[in-house]
Image 1 (cartoon, rainbow, N blue to C red):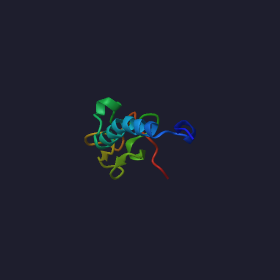
Image 2: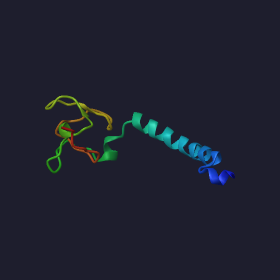
Image 3: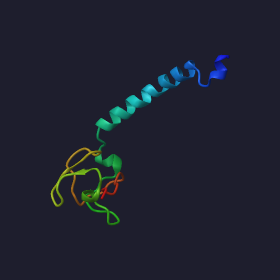
Image 4: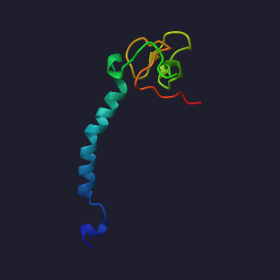
Length: 89
């Protein structure tokens, strides 16, 4: 049976792994670094009924300034940014 008949070759797997390594490294770095408020259009007012304390990324108590898992700095609970995702539940 030739190497082609066996399915995916070892060479193909190794090349795919080598190509994926830099992408995985970028994902890890991006997950640790927070974005600048201006980069995500952060504002201290709600937009279309959406505000930070209703976002999945907001960390803090409703009514008090908090932080965001994605955006750098102090975040107003009534704020909004382009990364807004409805809080689960």
